[in-house]
Length: 143
Image 1 (cartoon, one colour):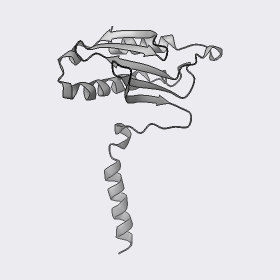
Image 2 (tube, rainbow, N blue to C red):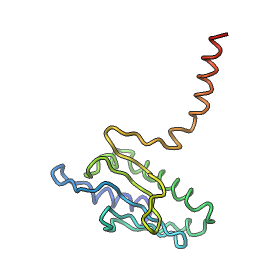
Image 3 (cartoon, rainbow, N blue to C red):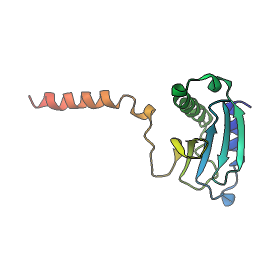
Image 4 (cartoon, rainbow, N blue to C red):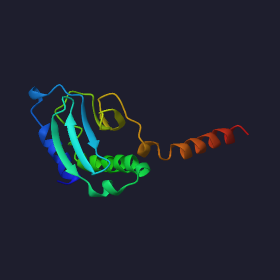
């Protein structure tokens, strides 16, 4: 099963009528550093989907987590192109979370909330440049 197919399994598992919303707050993604095996499970540790990403098993220790996080964020964004992740039948707010083998949170991959915005690298990519330009503009007006 590919990463995209695993995410589609999650979407299918949590697409229900509004009156059947499960009381979950997170979907957890737990990759195995040695094998590249990814287990996706809910708050109650029920496995929703599994897949193996062969490329992950060949990564160095330093490259493993950043690569896995970036791959998952891209896959989630692609799976959510039509709003499928945003409209899962899960009690809001909920997160898609990267966890280690002890189920400790490594990173929030995606947050769905009506009133909270998760600031990510993509959102903040050009913030420094924009703030510098804004400051230069402000200081330039004072001269």
